[in-house]
Image (cartoon, rainbow, N blue to C red):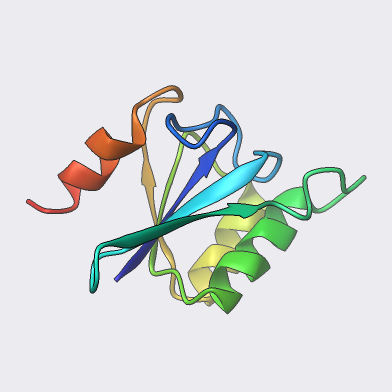
Length: 101
């Protein structure tokens, strides 16, 4: 399963979803992770829906986020991506540990 977490520094979850600088994408099938730049960060409108589309293209199945706007939530849902809310600033390693239970 691929998991995405919005992050500005690659270590902690961002306080925003669609306007985070990057997404950390973790693949539990092989334990690999990558930091991918959020191309929609500077969009005037639709940053959240752009992020949802990008994550769907990456075949992400689960997103951790502090909150997700209604349009982004709809886009994620339509793509079959689950959302798990978590506190901004949480360490990414801790969030990924929660998926192993």
